[in-house]
Amino acid sequence: MDTESSTFETTEMLADFLASTPLLSESWRLCNLANQNSPVGFVANQVGSVGYVAFSGTLFVSGSDPSFKNLVCLPVRDGAGNYLFVPLHDKNEGEEPVLVQGALLRIFENMYSNPSFQNQISTLVKTSKSVIFTGHSIGGTTASLAALWLLSYIQSNSANLSVLCITFGSPLLGNETLSRAILRERWGGKFCHVVSKYDLMPRILFAPLDPIGPLIKLLLKFWHLYMTSPHCGPLDVQRNEEFMAEIFQFVLIHLRGLVEAGEEAVTGMFRPFGNYLFCSGDGAICVDNAAAVIKMMYLLLETGSPSCSIEDHLKYGDYVGRISSQFLEKKSFMLGELPESSYEAGVALALQSLGISSQEPVAGPAEDCLQAARRMGRTPNLNCANLAIKLSKINPYRAEIEWYKALCDRSDDQMGYYDSFKQRGASKRDSKVNLNRHKLARFWDDVINLFESNQLPHDFHRHGKWVYSSQFYKLLVEPLDIAEYYRTGMHCSKGHYINHGRERRYQIFDRWWKGRNVRDEDNRRSKFASLTQDTCFWAKVEEARGLLDDVRSVRDQRHSALLWEKIDCFASYAKTLVEAKEVSIDVVAKNSSYSLWLKDYNEMKLQMLRFRPQFSSFMNGEIVP
Image (tube, rainbow, N blue to C red; front, side, top):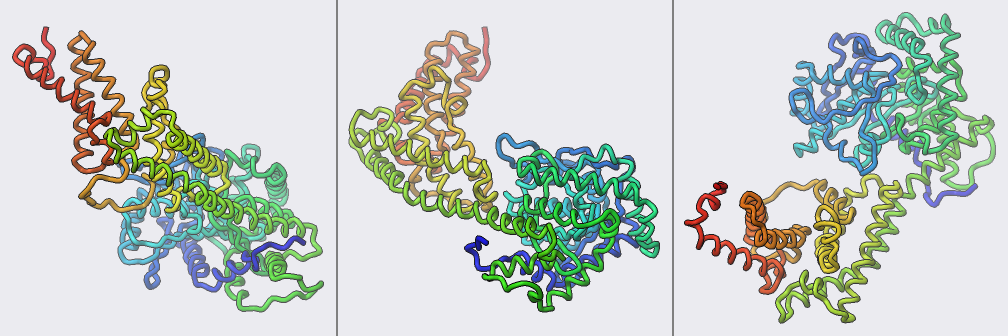
């Protein structure tokens, strides 16, 4: 066996750690209470500094689609205009919208609009250090949406509150874009989905349920009846063995198809997110990789039967009780040889916790699944580490451009950084800077390609190292790209830089910079910035130069007034930047493009003032015949 470089296999250890806390047992106790005795569909309780909100698994909305086939866009605002899930809509180019199951979203929206729910949440937020949302069955998706809503609220209000979501037998909620968005926001670790070995409910939305919609409706009715009246007993399921077998086989076949098709098949469909705690009568393991979760769901269901897949949805109380005590028990290797490494021992214990013996046919695939999950989890981080090494190797190119800027800003011609590069000759120094510009662009394009192809951590664009490195690169190099664009006359054939020539990487870096979590502070500068903070400033100067040329040649007074409005707007903007010292010293150099433009602008303004009596109406912004 090819042992991993990591010393330990951690899926079972993480499950044991969670089981050693009161989180699972207290969450299930409140879920059970909400299922049986909550007229409003939820129960709120505070234990010390921890607030719990448990949602009933019997929630439903009249008229909802029983087959759960309709995916709808996750709303940005509620009916009153308040923000709901804003951070989750910051998606990459080409991604489909964030979609969730429509009936499940309606259940949350009904709960959200309930004044009792809002009051309880408001009280818990004020009196608790942590809030835990939990729910069984359909209540689990309500808990997930409530957690996402509160996390979005906290992010926009900079509140200091910890949020966790624990679900039991929850169906899937949304598509792959939702899963990616949660990872990008670093919220994946805030969700723990407890799934029993055979439970059909968490797996049911992997299959297109149109053909079995009426059967699903009957199944939900049975589950709801048992949740509210557990004395009925799960043996009633045996009366419906035929249609239960049909549902079981239908879901199993489609799960098998997804696993065999691989990662690509899940795109555009329901997608797991967060951590999955798979539990059995022998223990539990924790898996956080979506592809591994899907495969593990299939492998475990394959060892079950129609009746146990239905009954398992109702046994979470038993499982929670067992795993909360079993973590204290010692596990051993009763059969076979001792594993050769601690990693192999961890894998063996994980399979044992799932109730899978080494003789079962699924043992090999389950072991491969755990190993693949570790590899897939480590690869993005390794790629990130390798990129950091490459960044250190290209830093000298950046340093040479910084040195070039310093020389230009001190030059006797007083043109500054931008204009010196735009009017450069064929010197070796200028050529080297231009070559370095291309090398840096190639590196950052490769970074973006890796990120968008999911070869880097999903929250890569939130890592301070990369946010600030990309921003510094943009501040330093984009003025050179603008200079080259206008030097080569590209604006004549394609149009001005901002709308027609700006590279996509700069637009992406703009979003990274705006998305960083920092508080606005009033930091007034006492001297000019080392680099102009608006990286498109020089492109705006070039456009303003073109507008002045147009004003000189235009005959139509109405058109002239519109041009002057744009020119004055830029002049005011530029003046604000210069006075706030948000520009580099090269902007105000004597012979810079901006200084020369400002001189022309002021002269034309003076000429207009001389003729003011003649064109007073025009100067007041009015056009007269």
